[in-house]
Amino acid sequence: MNRGRAQAAGPAEGLFYQERSQRELLAEAADLLVAAALNAKLAEDDEALAEYVESLVAAPGGPSGRRAVNRCLVGWFDRVVGAAWQHGWQPVDVHRVVNRRAGQRLARLAVDAIALQMRQYAAATVDERWRAQLEALDVTVWWDRDDTWLDAWGDRAGRDRAEVLVDTLDLLILLNTLPRLESLCPPPGAARRDTSGHGHGHARGARGGQPAGSTSDRSADPRMLDKVRALLAKAESTGFAEEAEALTAKAQELMARHSIDEALLAAGKGSRDSPAGRRVGIDNPYEVAKASLLDVVADANRCRSVWSKNLGFATVVGFEPDLDAAELLYTSLLVQATTAMMRAGSRQDRAGRSRTRSFRQSFLASFAVRIGQRLMAATEQVSEQAAAEAGDGRLLPVLAARTDSVREATETMFPEIVSHTVSATDGEGWASGRAAADLASLHTRDEVTADRPG
Image 1 (spheres, helix red, strand yellow):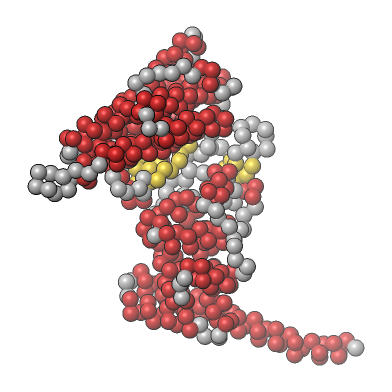
Image 2 (cartoon, helix red, strand yellow):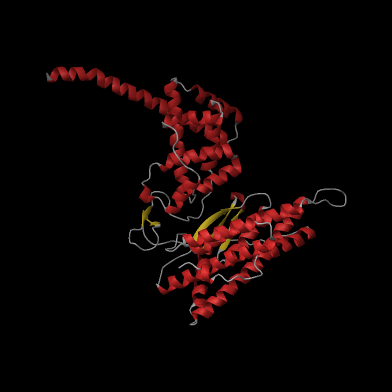
């Protein structure tokens, strides 16, 4: 009986190993072709690239070979996206830079590649900020099988097999050549849930502690943020400048007072909060003026902003409530400034040539300078009131210590910061932008004591 079973198992076992060997050969051939195609792409050898793409389309082995190519590309994406996480990139950063450099189609493919890579991590090892970005990008695995994903994606995008492969190679090259960034939070797999009951359920670094750029224990009260968002939404939608001004002022004062309350509370508890970092997109056109606007908004909210022009974002460093304030206010003021700029219309010189671009660049640059002055004045006014209420000299040392912490964290993350000034070449645009800032911002103060959280 035993001998018969052994004899019966022999041929089946041989077929199994033969089948596995064929699959491995197809996988090896596919990987070699993909690597050769990527090298040809990097070398800008269009003729060789076309030949390799044609070989990948033909995929020896029929349907099995096609699936082998798909599985190979899935593996490449897994490695390249995983490397991006280790190099400091986050999901929204990847989506932004791909959209900026390669367009919406490849940005959608990048979202799918992120979904592929993220499946391997347990939820408890993914930082909350990371998960929020995945949700915002709607990162989901919508396909049935990985070895048919690219075929399904091609059907959705209206791309034939060769076009899908070219898109895939383009995206792999783009992702593989991204520079290293400053790490702002633990990458997937390196975070753990805070189960101590302190803070608000944020993930922490797996080895404990909080390096520069990590999250602090306390973030802004969601109720306060909802209130601020509602105020700013009204400011953006109203057609009355005075109403927009008052609403924006009230939002800024709420955020400034909340920041002070949080700073005092953290100091009283001996908290070990440290500054965090957050990346904010800076898009064309007029990106220099937009970066300047973010810089003055960040400064008024006790943060620092460092612009990475070639990557399309600025990194804002500060404590969590201040980061929330800077991001919310910048987004709203950009809407208000853009609306006012567009309302001002286009411009021509005496010869009839367009000077609209210089007018608008100057408009936004002037808006940023003036709004910075008014925001800083409002923040100082709230601080003076809070200091008078505290009455024991506690506030100023606390705020000074936090300012020093933000500066040190920024210099650690960006040891070679270069400062730039924003120039304006259109006098009318400068004057118009200053007037718009006067209308959009903070020359009056509403009482907001009753609106304070808690």
